[in-house]
Image (cartoon, rainbow, N blue to C red; front, side):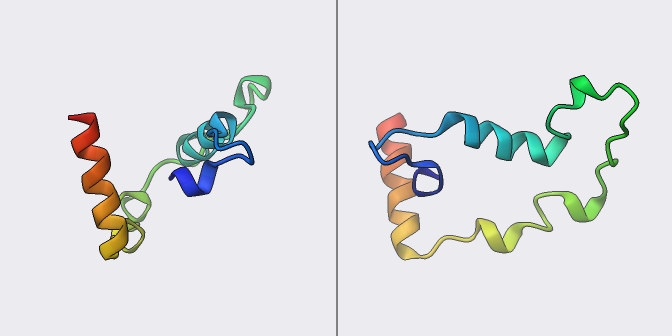
Length: 72
């Protein structure tokens, strides 16, 4: 995630991160569109459908372990 949302000064682009998360659940700017309809979540929209994107290679797995240990 850090690689996806990193800025040139090694910070995190929090706005872009939030936009990505929000796009999973809703439409950006929905509060300004009171008549808009949000597509209901279906089974193929869940994390099981995204499993292939959640698999780590060895390097990524090592990084995740480091992050979890640092958080712990």
